[in-house]
Amino acid sequence: MGNLLGCVKVDQSTVAIKERFGKFNEVLEPGCHCMPWFLGSQVAGHLTLRLQQLDVRCETKTKDNVFVNVVASVQYRALAGNASDAFYKLSNTRSQIQAYVFDVIRASVPKLILDDVFEQKNEIARAVEEELEKAMSAYGYEIVQTLIVDIEPDEHVKRAMNEINAAARMRLAANEKAEAEKIIQIKRAEGEAEAKYLSGLGIARQRQAIVDGLRDSVLGFSDNVPGTSAKDVLDMVLITQYFDTLKEIGATSKSSAVFIPHGPGAVKDIATQIRDGLLQASSSHE
Image 1 (cartoon, rainbow, N blue to C red):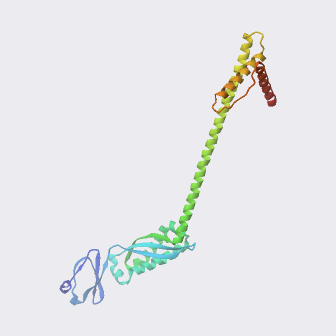
Image 2 (spheres, one colour; image 1 turned 90 degrees about the vertical axis):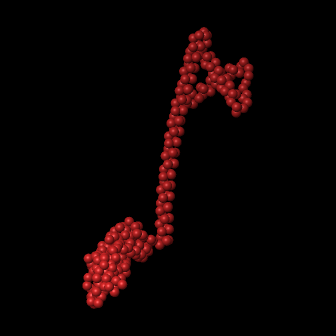
């Protein structure tokens, strides 16, 4: 009905290309327009001004001979001021953009090793965007944004990369565990050394106390009991220590039978043996 009445409607975010007798006449903005078809006017087509997106998958090879699929996402739109160029100069806009993306990616990625491709994907996207902007501006299109959204190496390469990463992490974990065990052993050794040192100090002080007590006992007994010599007192103290030791042995639950000589003369023999043993030990140390 609109065509019969010579009117045409243009939707929002869209422009229409008006021709007169097959020649470009003007660009029709959104709204209702008079189209006198009997004077040779007609709408050649419509052009959307909305932002469009094209995902391009490009297979290429890196510098270290790894084949990868690079997925680029190009966001573009036609410019209202250059609608005639966008409509007439390109027959297939998406194919044209795809060709430029292929050209830039296949010129950039082979210069990089695989790890650098992942690290420099923003630089690759910038190169694609600059090339597209320079080429498509002549055809009435604006390149809004270009993104490298995915880099997919071959499945075997990805598996090998994951194994390398896992091995590196396991090696790091092993080093950390060994370092922790080393610290534990060092601290344990330091603790044992400190414990032995303190134990040695305790034994030394104990022996010093015993010697001091024996000396005081010998001197006190010699002063209070006339006619006794220091030797007699020492023999008596040694016998007392000897029997105290036997008493401690008998008090333990794991002790076995101990046979000792019994009789009046045995005490003197025991004292002599103990004294001789102490003298021999002193002479051997000297």
